[in-house]
Image 1: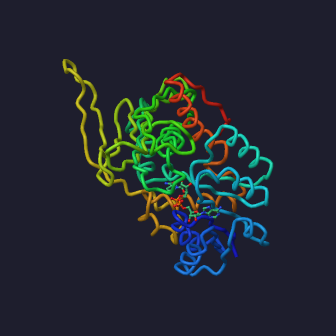
Image 2: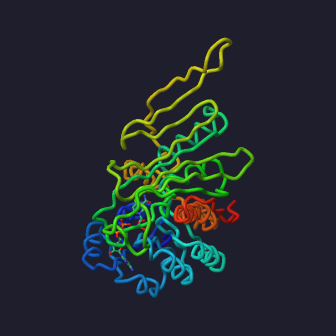
Image 3: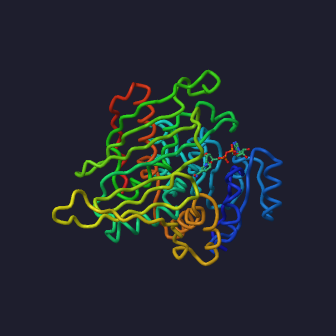
Length: 362
Ligand SMILES: NC(=O)c1ccc[n+]([C@@H]2O[C@H](COP(=O)([O-])OP(=O)(O)OC[C@H]3O[C@@H](n4cnc5c(N)ncnc54)[C@H](O)[C@@H]3O)[C@@H](O)[C@H]2O)c1
C-alpha cells in the first residue's frame, strides 16, 4: 500500500531511490533512464523490479501516482507538463525552467491538472537552513538586515549541455534561503557579468559570462538586499555553495571552505562611551532536523546536500497524502527561479534594473 513513485534520470536521481523505498507511505518504486545500462545498474543496486525504458513508457503504464524528474535542465519544463497532464503528481530537480514563459506554463499546468508540482530545492531543507530558521525564529539574529549567497562550481567536463550555461539560471540554491527565511519575493535585480566566456566555453545559450554577480531587492518595507555570486566557468576557486544571513543583532555565515564550520555572531548591547559594539563569534556545525522526519528516513540525513534529500521526499509524499500543496509548489518555485532568469537578462544588458514578475506565492 501507499503511493507508487517513478524516479526518472538516475545520475543524481539514484540518490532518491532508497529514500522512497524506505518511506513508510510509499508502495512501489520504479526507475527510468534513457541510458539502459544505467537503468539496469541502479535497479540492480537497489533491487527495483519495475523498470521503464522511457518516461513515455512509464506514463502509459497503469497505476503509479507520482513521478520525480531528475533529468537534464532543458527537459524539465516539457517533462513536468507531460507528467501533470498524465494525471500524476510531479517533483522536479532544480531549476524549474530557464524562461519566464515556461514558468508561466508550469504554473498553469499545475493549476489545470489539480496535481502537485514540487521543485526539489535542496537549499531550503539543508541543516544550515534549519539552523538559520531557528536562529531567526528565536530572535537571536534580531531583524533581518542583509543576505549573501554564493554558488561557485567549475563545470568543465560536465555533460555538454552545461557548456556556457548562464550561472544565474541556477540561482536557486544561493538565493532561495533568503526568500524562504523572510517569506519575501524579489522585486527587481541588477546584475553584472564578469569574465566574458571564452570561445571554448560558449554553449547553446550563446555569449555570456563565467561569473555573474547580482543584487536582488526583496519585497517588503525593509529594503532588504540579497547579494548573490554565481560562477560556473573561468574561476580558479574550489566549490562553494551556500548562504549567509545577517540580522541587526547577530549573523550566521557560510564557511569559506565547504565542510568547515559555520560562523555564528552575536552582537552585545552598546555600552555608553564605547566605539562600536562588541561581537562574540563562535563556530557551529548544524546537525539538522532529523526529528521532523519519520524514523525510517532519519538515517538519510547523513547524506548529500546537507541532509536535505529525505526532507524533500517526505514533503513531496506528505503533500500528496494530505491533499495539500507542497511547500515549494509551482508559484513558490517560480518566485525562487525567475530572479535568476531576470538577473542574467540584466547582465546581458550591462546591469540595468530588471523587474521580476509576482507569481502570487503564499
Ligand atoms: N542540489 C541539487 O538540487 C542538484 C544537484 C545535482 C543535480 N541537480 C539537478 O538534477 C538534474 C540531473 O543532474 P545530474 O547531475 O544527475 O545530470 P546528468 O546529466 O549527469 O544525469 C541525468 C540522467 O538523466 C538521464 N536522462 C537524460 N535524458 C533522459 C530522458 N529523456 N528520460 C530519462 N532519462 C534521461 C541521463 O541518461 C542521465 O542518467 C539536473 O536538472 C540538475 O540541475 C540538482
